Length: 329
Ligand code: SIN
Image (cartoon, rainbow, N blue to C red; front, side, top):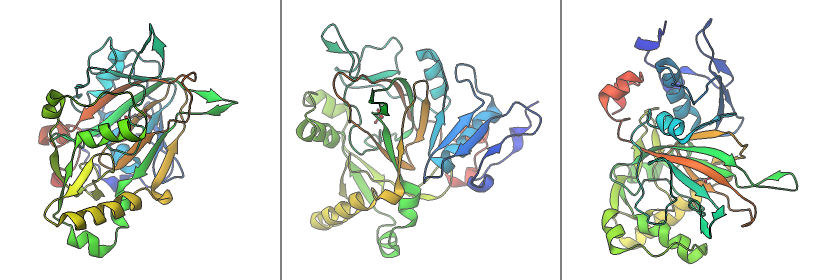
């Protein structure tokens, strides 16, 4: 019987190290990396429904380690979608160029070409950003399934790199934390889109007026309280943030230039190397990420992705159902 029902977990429930859940029952194992982010979850087949108790443990591990790897999965798109929807609603795309997917909500990221066209988005996320920070309804998690991973001379290519925004906030100069404690920043979808076109040779067309209308710039606090850990994170990313509100433009530019450098320092970073069959779930509040484009057009990479919005994680009844502390929101 599931006895996890009344347990309220906190971020400190698990100390670093390997741990398993509930003696005597089928075990989910969480093995943290020795890096600033990342843990491997063993003992779950994501093609099957995840029990409420296991899901609660995943949620706590997500807050604590930011990036969770589920190795050895064999999933249909519907399985990936069903698992992703446990975290929240999936965002649709406004891009006409997106891949034809057999399953709405499941995107394809790939440089594979069939019948003269990419089967998915070939250059998604290839610089530092936070998915969906450009929306009023922010992103909560990304769920990425690695199906084909490029290799050259035995070396795995096409990794995904992360940066830890809990740690970045913690180590910010106190003076800046105090000065900007109530600040908000503008996030603009078009910034990353144009950056990819102008600096990364992306073949994506300029946004249409209609696409711009669907993704207007939005404001979010610069420092957010994380919905799982209850701790502050630095919620700014070079991909989408254009301006800190309420201060002169020159000052905003100066602080943003500082923050964008600061938040990508080596000590905050974690490079993830893929194996086929991995599912990766990462926390979009507590991390930034980028896809590493170090492979050639003839070295194929194929991933399926669900981008999950924060539609549920702030909802009190959902929080109760995953045994999260109500006081954080
Ligand atoms: C993304 O930015 O969501 C894609 C990351 C990746 O393909 O590694």
